[in-house]
Amino acid sequence: MNHNLSSSCIYTIRHSRALADDYGAGGSGTFKEKARWVTGSRIHQQACKAKKRVPILFGPAEADTIDGVSYWGLIDAITLKSQGTEISFSSLQKLPRKHRLSSLRKLSDDAPLSDNYIRPYVPCKTPKFILSAPVSSQLALHDIEAEEISAREGAISARMHLHRERDRTIIVAKRKQVLSSTGKLACSVCGFDFRQFYGEIGEGFCEVHHLCPLAIAGKEVQTHLDDLAIVCSNCHRMIHICHPFLTIAELKARIRAA
Image (tube, rainbow, N blue to C red):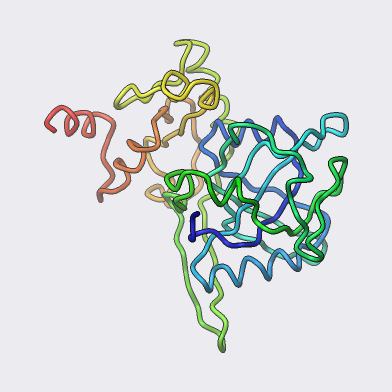
């Protein structure tokens, strides 16, 4: 059992296409809900204080395909608005198999959800199939170009994440371009292919690297497909672990030398 995860989680619904796009573009995403996730925000704040991560579980939003939980990830931020909530998440991954909604138990009364439950927000107890998932899949990797600022106000630690805004349309377009031209999404550095290695669950997965990182640009820029590269998660981290960041060619050279 992984003790880095909160004992509480959030179940919600999202369109399958949006989930697939976020998964294929690196596993991070942001979405808005009309409801104010007051309890969810409290759960997230308490988890941050305990240095734990809150899982977010997704079912499909299409009314005729409510067939269980199919994706899960880790909540990065829950921002309450005057009318609604903005939620950011990362580490999105497909579950090896779908789990029925009745496998989730509501945090309020410990009752199981109905398998036909259609509301878009329920605080739940983190299920065993998440707590017992492989530890490596639960490591919370912060956004590469994100800055975390901690400020203490009274006895409460408030955290804010600052992110360079990305247009996911071009990320998805890059993935489709490479898949169309090469038939696969292989890392530009080491050649690793998630689909080839992991089978069906790796279908369409890759990370997309900005050859000139947005944090270095320091301003709004026009990004073209040629400004992006397909990379695996490991190579993406290694590119950004050095300052200044490594180029694709420099990391290839280091791999050959090693």
